[in-house]
Image (tube, rainbow, N blue to C red; front, side, top):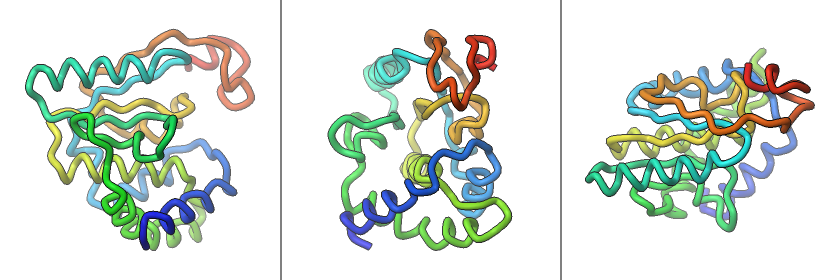
Length: 182
């Protein structure tokens, strides 16, 4: 598929909404050789400031001479902002190629007892594959909504950073700071 078609494919996954759990992302990653296990990950979560914190960390590592991948959530202007290496967004062609590669596997998994794969899970796998294949020195990963079942939580982090935790996404994560932090 081309870039426009890849965006349409991902937009089509939105209808499945948000489904917490690590089973689908684990199954997806296993099908692609567990690219997340090849990453030296720094994982950033929290309610506010996690994107800025992830960007600061990536900048410091780049200045130190490392090749740094970053996965941000959400994007501001262009979906490709989510997946970058050394401050360069993934190209439209690379984005489309990854979506094309993942789509048949995601569709197959979606027809199993695991249920439909989500947009966030596919984008997370795209980031893992892109960074692992380009052998980044470090991957700075920002959580999506957060919580222990966020698709980014399958990485084995070198460092995990938690910014402030506030009452956000209470309908999914819980209605107290303690529940959200858990």
